[in-house]
Image 1: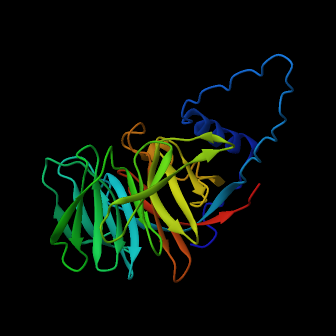
Image 2: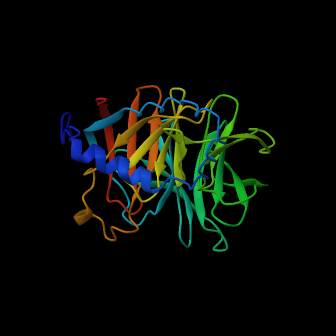
Length: 280
């Protein structure tokens, strides 16, 4: 299905995506005016991040009852977490959408993002300030960990676990102790952007869904600067979403070996392999 659904960003679509991102910007305090007799410093405006479009390469089935919160591709299988009650952790065959293994989480918890670190799956809960450690092979529980605030998205690089909590920040955790070791504010043209949701580590960048939008932002983890915006407008039309208000884009998985990028959404009936186009 190569070449199916080629989307070239129009000026209108690109502007729409950026306006959505702008609507999610956290409030900032205006700087105080300069005192009389002092010169106003000239500060160059940050460069506008490039905007990328997409081309659909393949479409795969996805469970329309899966309220996707976390997604990762590992050893040929999708590892997925879902929210609502009961929330689940599951292994999914990419090509067919078949659930190969599944574990329900206690209904006390609303499941959120996940990531695979070694032989463990780490998963978050929304407002319980608790994460879980699962065995990658059989999804058996192996432990718990705590964090402040909410849990939204989770990914990792070679030395850190990276967590989003709905604010304009990424947190870094030690992969063994799962204790926070630092954080970085995420900014778009110098302004903080919140609602960072599901995360994926892609070739040195953190890709993050922006909740309730059809965009993914590309974040430099060293600075927190957004270095690119991916506009996925039209990927799954509202007419194919059972509840357009809730069934939003959420779920990014990267196959590093073959450099394939997969995306889906909450309760979406399809999972897409896409190729980025542009930038513009």
